[in-house]
Length: 132
Image 1 (cartoon, rainbow, N blue to C red):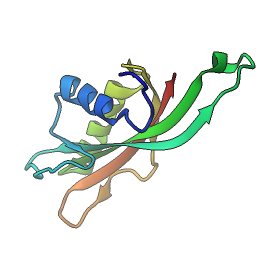
Image 2 (image 1 turned 180 degrees about the horizontal axis):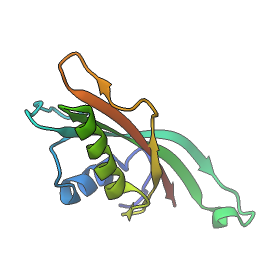
Image 3 (image 1 turned 30 degrees about the horizontal axis):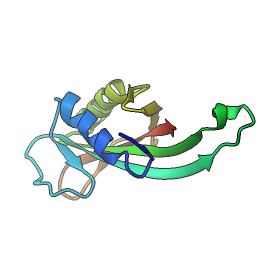
C-alpha cells in the first residue's frame, strides 16, 4: 500500500485476520456483525502517535507512526475466553505484514470479565508501528 499510515492501515490488519485467523468468527471495527452462538473475537486498530523524525540519523529521516490493535475475545466460559486470548497472542505477537510491525501482547490485567449476556470478555492490546 503506497503512503501507508496508521490511519489507513486498518484494511491491512483486517485482511491479515481474514486470510490467516481460522479459530473463530471476527467482528471488525465499524462493520455489521451478527453475534454467533460460539466464541468470537473483535478487533480494532486505534492510532496513538504520529512522529516525523528528522534527518539526524534516527530512523534515517523516516516517519514513525504508532497505534494499538485491540482484541476482545468473547466466550461462554472464563477459561475459554482466556484460552482464546492466548491463541490471539500466538497469532499476532511480533508479526510483520505489509509494512505493519506488531509488538508483544499486553493483557489488560482484568482477566475474563463476565457480561450480562452470560458471556465472558477479555481485552488485549498489541502495539503497532509503521515506519515509512
